[in-house]
Image (tube, rainbow, N blue to C red; front, side, top):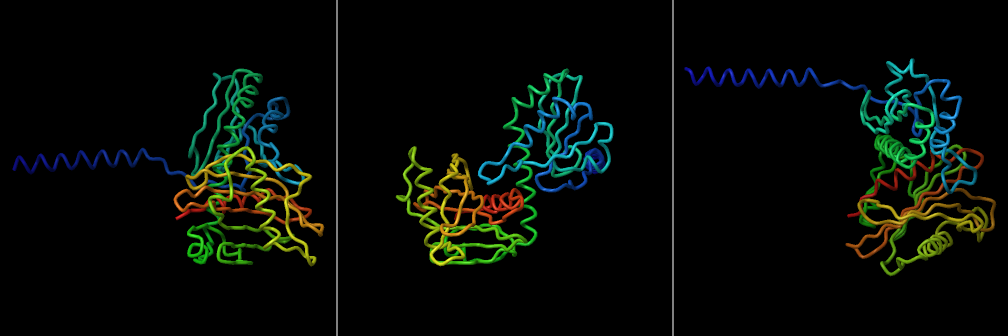
Length: 325
């Protein structure tokens, strides 16, 4: 009997602790907001002055490889006193706090989920501006990571279920049903989506390991390869025309990680030889050591007379969903 009572009391204690834990858990609303839109929470006085200028200088950093400068993020500002209720559910938030100890803090899921909140605090304007400049790269990196995650979530709502890419190239990639396979060979795919002003496009192909030598000349090797691919597969509207890299605009390259593999990211402008067409491109050459090859994924947009940021961002998100078998 005593043994039974002990077991019963133990169970009641465990259940009580569990109920307490559940009661303390916060229920967070789903976050909201347009992709690449940052909510800035600060007083109107600061926004109109040097602090606001510094914030805009960070968040409006132009994206490299566009024919016309476009900011990395769009910005909405609200005064601190109205930051409450549904406004707090914005997905990406930058809060400026004055009269406090200097602090730079990155938090997740503070008021909603998923959410990224960055707080920059300082006793003076000078201190806040200094922190903004010091952490510019971190601010851009954190917000871009959050927005890429949201873009990938949206892509996942309507996935194209084609298996031909995986069966042919041994890799999977997530893209919407709005994309169609415009061209396919044994080792090359061209995905295309019609938009109101043109098209967005993704190229997927593989190269032998010997095709690229890792040295100081990698960017020229990549451009030479993409030009040969353009000539072979991407024809223009006029007979004999094809896509090439625009030489008048210097392409930019960095080393990065895609699918946990070393990759070269190249950005620049493309044009059609023999026709008045062009736009931005982003190219990733991924080292696939296991299969002794390079996997190339490129996104490019043809969208004359309109902003291209969100089109290119979608292409980048699709490419970064790649999983090489």
